[in-house]
Amino acid sequence: MTMSDFAPEEGNRVEPPRFPNTPANTFRLYNHPAIGIPLVVFGVLILIINGILEARNQQSQPWIDAVWSPDGEAIWDDTILVRSRSVPLDNFPILKREISDRREKVNGKEAEQLEALITNTGIEKTERVVFMDVPPDELDSLIVSGRLPEPGDPEVLAGVFARLDSFEMDETTFEVVGRLSPAVSGFHFAYILPESTSFESLFSEQEGVTHGWLAISGRDRLKEETAIKELMDEQDILGMRVPTTSRHAYASILGLMMVAVGGAIAHMTVFSILARRSGGIITVGVQAVLQQPRVLLGMHVVMFGTFFGMMMVGIQFPVPHLWLLNLITHEFTSGGLSYVGEAYASGRIFAAALATWFNNFIVQTVGMTFVISLIVPMVGLAKNLLSFAMVGFGMAPLWSGMSGMFSFHSITMTLELEAYIIACVIVVYFWRRVVAGLMEKDVIPQIRQGFRVMGSGVILTGVMLGVAGLYEAVTLILLR
Figure 1 (spheres, rainbow, N blue to C red):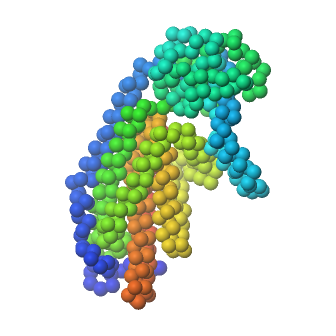
Figure 2 (figure 1 turned 90 degrees about the vertical axis):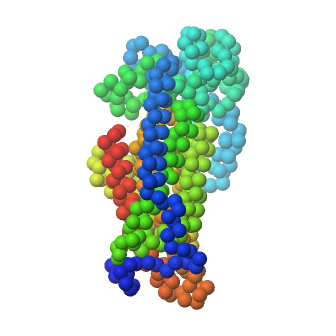
Figure 3 (figure 1 turned 45 degrees about the vertical axis):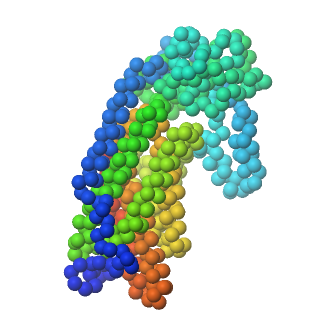
């Protein structure tokens, strides 16, 4: 494909043929320049204010700075010694049966891939029961609902993400009698069992019992340690972040929605300006996008509806959300996207931007949207819909501090996701031209026009994702 393929066919203006009954400039209804940027600013302000209120509300919460390690030597002398063990997987019969059935059905390379998936997601990991000696008054201050366990009775306090109301361990059935506040750091996926001689045998020399430590005000102290990275590598230290409340989570989603809507309108305002240019390489693609207003609006509704819908689902299902986060973390540290993680870890902005652009544009957009949709019609749209669902689920604002992070990362969201949506609209345009050619028995000119627009769309999305990658690299590296 050469530069001449994008040049005007006649006159001074590039304008692809419109589809029947599609009037020009119909997109003006929702691309007014006075709407987009103010909505983005309003959304960012919601995120900033929400983050400030969240931090202020957490300042007085007990155990907000607690950190603990289930298995490791105490860092300081004034820590509380704890013992812990995992809830047996038998308490999750459906999950256990599903994993067992899948293991029986695969072998060879598929079995290896299944085991890698199970390990990387942590799907077999269950809540820990933490056996420790803490004064009743101290524990009572942590409870958001229910009551304290009776001394010596098989009763526990459950973290906010703990799944069971009762469980069995060594033929003893434990009942949840109280729920911990989300602000209790490090215990969102655990049960607290007050230390008692009645249960010493369960936490003595049993298989799987670990010995660790708890520092109630340890987070700030840990940050002051010069060898913090080495400590984190040596033992699993929990409590570096805490779950947020539902109120703050939904406020974050509201702010992100405002940014998404405003960002879409702002992009289309810019597109309307670019569409009036004569002979630009991306003009053909921009005009083709704007001449499909119903497709464009529908694609935004479907894609962002899926994105935010799955974000709300993620709030309701925190444990599968944790599994997905574990998988994403693995991909960026040891998996197929480790080159992106390494680029960010190096602190080099342009290397990180290039790695981001290569994955988002070359792999995800060119390969998995445009090219694959030429082989199997529209399949790139299904791939992007799945990506929006997974990213939305993974970005569910379950953790404190995410609202503040989203205040700048929301711009990355709108820059990247708009590019994927535009790519989908270009794919639809291409296949509409093919169908129009078949119906009108004028296939070759229509396909030529479709490829002309797709080529322009490739360049357009490449530029959009280049800007998004640079912005993401700058913000994540400079603001981390």
